[in-house]
Length: 518
Image (cartoon, rainbow, N blue to C red; front, side, top):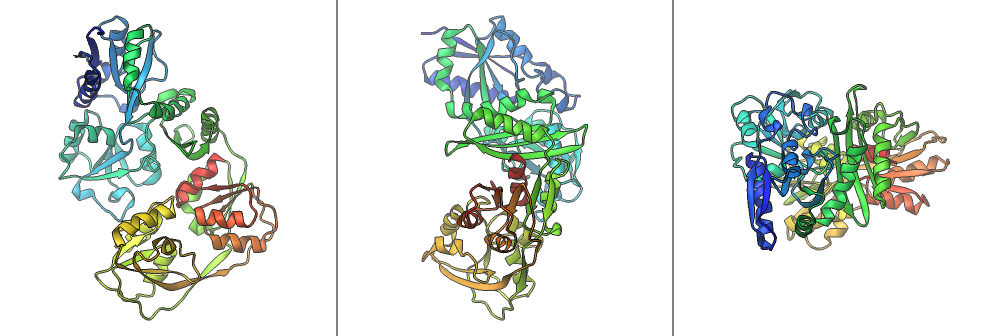
């Protein structure tokens, strides 16, 4: 049997959870483990802004020194706190499973406004000392006021309860692992594809001496190889960025369907520019290179989007300062169809914000018992602006998944689908006879004249009808096309367009992310 393992850890509540988790994993394999608490400079310095100490070894240096001098055999770190280079003689031999790597916005009841983005009232004071979080918060909500916040997780939450802030941002992983009681606080969990986390967020890193072959063999028994594969890309982007961890950089990678799917964000303070990108690639090295190119280099290309200028605010904002020229010209227009009566149903399902607009602009009477459902976040936001909180919000990426999820809540009930005349009926087809379905046309699509010589490097289409109308009028070849969803992609492929990319989400943010990555 191997000698007793001395495991080094910081003394915070979260660090001790991590150490005890590791201890338990190793004890299950039959090893004896003792935890030795080591205080780091980051624990002692509480007056500096977090962005001035994160990533410079302030939370790891003393642990690494204890490894090198043989005081401990193993150090457990939050992987996101590690610098991208390690002292000579040390190595990260294994990584843990990945806890939820999203960010959680904790909001005091007085500052909660579910009609606003992120659930925060206008001008809310938000606590965080992470430059990455600051940049993303202000990109989503420029009206927010950001104040520095330090301390361990319980200390930060107490500062929120003491009314020093309207809200604070914390990693969901820490909250989940500590199982903190938040009954008096509203918790808004923001997906990592919306609020991009730090590289390797939610993962534990197991660090040992490079020469310690026995410890390497032991720790590999608790290694999560699939997590290691994804975070290797996140960490490599961080490593190759000029400025390293000091940059407000977010990177999140999923390995799905034999592809690396990568979201990244970067704020360049000296240029006052914020960039986001999404890309898919089969090669890890190419994924890293393309992310770096998209985030750092100016792009000289023209992008057409099938919406008018006034409808593309988010899309334009996300591509501002990238060197991309945008042509916005909608090839379709909408006309209302008057409706005098609708059946009383258990649900009213909206597949687009356009359907929401034309339904409610007519003040059609509906049953007060009806619950509302939205295809995705954009449609849900249109309902929320009217003071209506949908009881169901679908998957922004996948219509089929949305239908399957909705089936679970509407099975055996009646559902009304206000929408376009001759619409696609994608959700209805998937539901089949699992519910009583009623369709009602509240608007129709008509072709709108556009220029016949729109030439662009990338064409972005937001519906099947925009594809049809555009190609009826513009005869110049389409080199690359981006579709807002699968039905739009199908319409492009049916027209013989060979290179079609589907946005990761059916939102303008999703469209902008993928355009920057092409």
